[in-house]
Length: 462
Image (cartoon, rainbow, N blue to C red; front, top):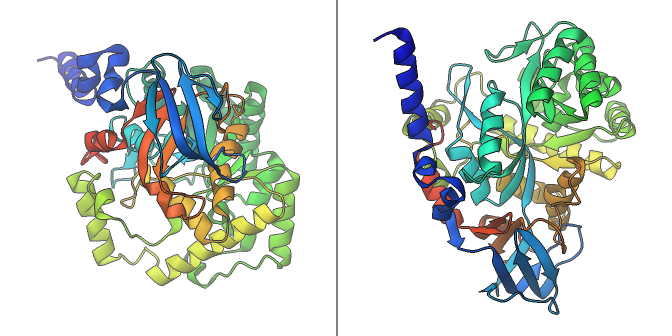
């Protein structure tokens, strides 16, 4: 067999494995197997309603959904003939979650993150994540192709805002990074991915201020934005260059505070310090948004349900990591201390007028998409944010940043019918966010149990 023929066979086999269920059903029917209720006309009754604006919950509300849109909110709303009635007594309806740091890939263990177009979108949607901004990829075209499949109803998953290739400096340490040394190089790569459909770019820790400025200038020209996982460049430098979002919060600002990697456990964030006050003032003045990833800084504790989503080799890798605790990992005590410092930084930023958004960043360490998003919301409440604040951060605030608040992010007549329905009252107990009963995306009623069952054991493999 020739090399070309062998390659064709491998590609064909891989595609048939990854997308066999979709190919077998075809078109919009590809989604039917994941639905809890068929049809696209519904009336939801007896629901507690949290609209995503930060307003208190309203009791015993009625929502009407038709043709993918919310057509009525309130008990006097006209109900179309044939609408399917769903009684939501004991449940709360929220806007679908809009998460801002999601990866459609998973770490292979050899400095490469492999694309996971089968498991990750299902796991995100099962958690009520109906819109997600990806946070970079080594092969962004995979994410763009997945977006196309989701948009055309050929695969289940959240509405994707895709981030293009990683941009890093010469000392960057990942195999898939695009090394850029000049503004022109950064502009060219940003322009390429913008032309392909990416709405943002991701710069990594070793990016130079000059290269970052090139990416920012091209992104501004194209209506894109630039996200930064920083380190060698400080948050102050990035803010002055015009970066749009700083990912991971305090973890990206180690240079500003002079934090050495081996000293994170001893670091205490002091909002009254001159360094903290100057940095926060600058970030707010420059309009920089912080994207927190709380689940990524918490101690490595995973439920059995989460671990069941991992492929066998990824589960073993995580269990070995926890059991051996290699010397390059911080101790659990240091990790908890570092986690606390992140939350204090985020609270100071918000109290000073900054815009905070959140994401799951579930691409390694046994973390699981969807579950990590819920954990991030719970972590912010645990840190002192109110549940209604956190729900607004995860819905309407994120939609506003993406320039789509007229379409989703709140519950109102005319908006896209993206809804998360949970048993309980997350505005009273944020742990209830985990108890997902229905997820409506574009007016279709997905079953979280079916989505998770289809992803079980695949994360890290497909």
